[in-house]
Length: 228
Length: 408
Ligand SMILES: Nc1ncnc2c1ncn2[C@@H]1O[C@H](COP(=O)(O)OP(=O)(O)OP(=O)(O)O)[C@@H](O)[C@H]1O
Ligand SMILES: [Mg+2]
Image (cartoon, rainbow over all chains, first blue to last red; front, side):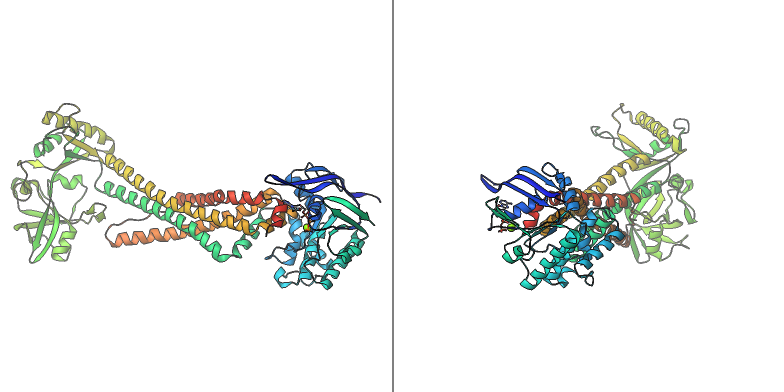
């Protein structure tokens, strides 16, 4: 039961900007068990988003070791990273990041398309995912026809549609009013309860952090506090 | 992803910005239309010229005065030369010989007046040109001997002077003020690339020499047309003619003061010229297709920048480099494919209109759109789309997902 979904050791990330080097992560260790709900907090510029990008396989660390769900990520090439993102990671962004011209169902189908899933199965699973976030009646709406909270629900449906090992949410409530924010948080927590999906939430909001059973504080690219 | 899906997505994406897609397509439409129309017109011109050269007659050989450039004072061709060529022993490959004197003349009939090409001919002219009268009779040996004032009219001249094409035998027209009796009307030849051949008046060679088309020496002729006994003998007949003329003009070998050309020579010359024209027209049109391609590249680059975040998102969702590449290449290829299709239609329309205008202005020119030029245009325009889409697509595919997602 103590299976590690995320196992990262001595993660370092150096951004080179011309002559200048920005050390965004300076030897960060983190381990997350399956089914955990974890929030990452820290001041602006401390490296939270950078860490999310590493854990979500959007980017490679400059050095360090990282195993996601048992697979070593650090040496993977771009296509392998794309593949592991597709199978194991679901993203929820602060600004929703839906395709503006596509309907809710098309947006949710997107990860399944890149998984080469057939049209019928894709549609069924996308509808199921939209129903699980309470949008069964908004399947053919485009983002412009949905409220912010609803858009974020579509994004959550998209994140969970290919049953990933972890869902990464970078300030998922940042663009929402407090009521919709709470609803979104509740939805994420429910999903965790039902599917034991590991949930990593980056947030500035202490109330959001309150809802998670583990809080990791980051400063200057290292973990300074880790309480459960 | 499979290929059907990207096509649908690309269509949706193109449809979402119709004006922009339309204008981009227009660039290709114009390019392809230009290529199609130019090639069609070029081909049409070629066919027309070839047709009119072949229409002059069959197995023909033309003999002109003047030959190699550095020959001074070339001797003129004479009736004597023509008679020598007709000798079946010296020139067994020659079937008939038709010397000609050519000029222009004013022909009148009771107040009506027209300017026509006046040709002094011998009876064999009709055989050599494969051209006969529709009524009356052609010029005969007796007319030559008697330097008769008789004329055979082309239908254009008949129309101009009499307003009809038949029932003219026995009328008297005036050529340069001298009365000539009409003995026949030639059958209609139709227009050619060298102007209408029906605007002609044929008179006996001797009459022309004596009274109408006077030359410095009495028995001089302008051109001698010779027909070979059959198509295979044309080259041999040319050699025989050259030998006869060299002997008669006393020229050294390589110092010919005459030229012998057969239809093949004319066709080759014409083909060279029309090919150059076609290539030139096609090249100019190709440049506009290239410009259209640059338009595609431009729009695709703009589109890549606009959709940077979308690309980042797709990559986050698991899109590989080649998925993104495919998406953008399909879009640019579809743009150029549509452009190609509309361009072919438009080009066909332009070619047809050009034919109509040419026909209306008296130069029949049937534009010819070959399957090959349609294929060429389709393949070329799609290739243009692929080629000019490659760079933008590659740029899109190479975007780092993190950077792309951060893009504002
Ligand atoms: N692409 C980049 N190029 C250069 N420097 C970068 C890049 N991304 C992040 N950084 C730098 O790395 C450091 C960490 O940035 P990061 O975005 O991870 O911070 P954060 O904790 O998410 O901040 P915030 O709470 O404001 O979102 C910052 O100093 C930032 O300027
Ligand atoms: Mg951040």
